Image (cartoon, rainbow, N blue to C red; front, top):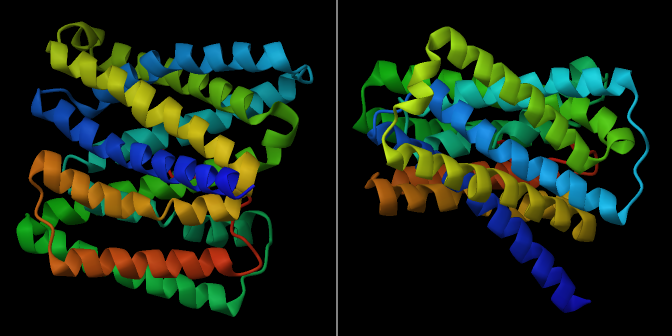
Length: 307
């Protein structure tokens, strides 16, 4: 039993680190001249077959309920939010801010879900949860000041706004996905959502110039495959396994390693400086999110890290 618990914690932590590595892979792609729309399209096109292979494998062992048209339409609609619009805003934001700041902002997702749930689902917010969010946002400001000191003020502000909007859009996806996952199943939901997002990215590429998908340097396609397999599919699989074993709350708390992992991955692979202010800000954010998750009324029943 104890070994199974530790294995689940390892899976959750590894999933968070792999999710965090997405920002590093995207930054590498930008160094070879790829744009946000190209990186996103290649990521979705490469990951889609992997997700549907997982659906096929899962259906060999279980007999899921037949899907009704209404649920398919809803899942495809929220897929446009969670996997297309949110990811596109996130990738755009990475042009302007460090990978460390991007991940810390995205880690506010549970807090954003909490606030949006009050408006969409009329859920009450405990006073302690407000204080937890204040602590988390204070930490964000500390990491934000670290980036301001090192980069152009306007660029950091623009990038931070784009990534925050990405987190907000992904939070809306999580809220509505939580209403559907019981009927559709987590693997089928992700596969359908990814399919609709893939169609959207391909249409976007047709509008912006589909030829750009075929003239990239070989490294861009290599990083797209790495992004699809190691930073999209595998972390989702690991986190789903952890949630199934130890629940969403413990999984989310184990995932607090994500922002710290991104800061050090950015330092190691991209030579992004790590300051005492940034590390202190990350710690403050993690404390705020940990308080939020420890309070009885959880912000979301499946608070997986943002994609």
